[in-house]
Every structure is written in C-alpha cells, then in structure tokens.
Image (tube, rainbow over all chains, first blue to last red):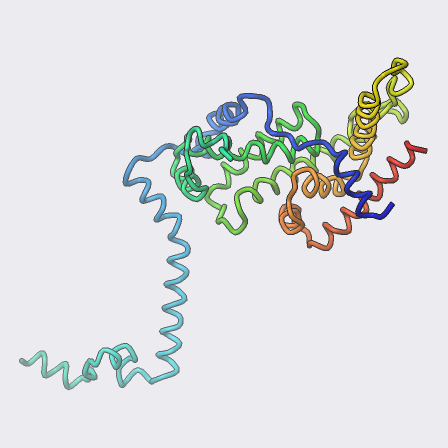
Length: 109
Length: 208
C-alpha cells in the first residue's frame, strides 16, 4: 500500500482530540491562582492604575527607542561638526550661532 | 464557532484580555483559561491520556502563563505559547513516568512504557455471535484496530508521540508544530515519518 494511503488509514484510527478537562477546570485554575503567594499574585488596579500598568509595560520599548535616538543624534553631531559652530539641530532650526560675544552682548542688554 | 470564553468576554481579542490580566483583572485571566482549555487539554490528554496527570499539566500550564504575563510579548500567538508550555510539561511528565516504571515495575507485568495497560486482544471477532450483521463485525474490527493504534501510540518515544499529537490529532500545521516544539520543520517531518512507520508496523504485526 502506498505511504500516503497507509498514513491516511492510520490517521483515521487515531483518537479524537480532547475537547477539555473535567468540568469546572477554569475554576480550579483560578483557585490555584488565588492560592499563589502574595508576591506572585496580581492585585486588581482600578482606572488610572490600568493606564499606569500599560505605560509601565510599554516603558522598556520606549526607553530603548529613546536611547537609540540619542545615540544616533550624538553620533551624527560628532561626525558632522566640532561643536564650536553649533549643533546640527540648531542649524536645522535656523538658530544663530552662540558665541561668547553674543552671550556677553545679551547679558549687557 | 463560539468559544467557551465568549460566555464571559464576547469577542475580546487576546491582547486586550492579556493587558487586563496583567493589570490584575482576574476575570480576564479566567476568560483566557476558558478560551484555551480545549487547546491545552488536546495536548496534555493527547500526550498523557485522560486523568489527574493531564489535569495537573493543564493547570500548571495556565499558572506558568499567569506568572509570565509580563514577559509574554506576543512574539508567538498565545495558542502556540500555551501549547509549547503544555507540551514541555507533558514530555517531562512522560519521562518521569517512564523512569518510575523502569525502576519499580518489573518487565512483563502488563503495563506499557507510559503507564497504560498494554493492548491485549479482547474477546473480539471470535466472540461475535453467529449471524451478527456485517456492519457490527466491521465496527468491531475497526474498534480493535483503533485500540491497536492507541496502544502503539503510547509505545512511541515521547518526541515522536509529540509530533503525532500535534500534527494529526490536534491538526496543527508543520510550522505550528515546529514552533510549539522549538525544532525546525524538517525535524517535525522526519519524526512524523518515523512515528507513522512505527504505527504502521504495529498494525501490520497485529494483522499478521
């Protein structure tokens, strides 16, 4: 008998997948959750606490993205100028170059 | 299809339930348990057979999910993640069971490697009353063959049994089975081929 037919025959003889455990399974799991020690247990937090939980969950990703941004900007600054002629961000925003003279003039005014 | 959890959380996507469970909403976690009970049961009972051991694996699977809610990032689907936990726990239970039997049960005492009673042909066809209908005979023969396959399945190596349970009993794709087992797809295919050969041989041996 070809392999494919043989496999089909065996597959037909395999047991059906179980559709669940004994009735009340979710209740038994939740009873175990309730019996977990305090440190492992999550206490319900209302309203703003939920937002806080979401933000805390997202924080590592946000922090990582910011770090990458800072690193990229620093590298760009380092490669594109000595720092005496203003940063690329200042150039981008069209800000005048800050010199000791301009600071003194501003202080005297 | 209406999933059992929809009684409590109609249509709420997994991500929403997970976020609420992370924030301490136990009703949301209970809805996850109800939604995935069947999936976890198919793996645990498929691997271990029905009973306390499979129930323990099922409960432990969800307790582990609860403990790791903050670490679950959704790289795999929740279904795959739970199947992976349930399969790992089932494999550990099978190995523990095998080692227990090897240590404490003398060979030839009528217990299979995985703790089930070895297949013994029952009264079967010989016991059929004369004049039994063709359909009844066919049904009895089929039931006997089904029992042989079940016994042969229990005799497979745990990792071979795992691919049969995931691919043919639960109906996962090769990719999904590979994800759940943490092995390449090629490994799933080769294990499945070996497992099916063994099941086929077991049937032929009994037929002979």
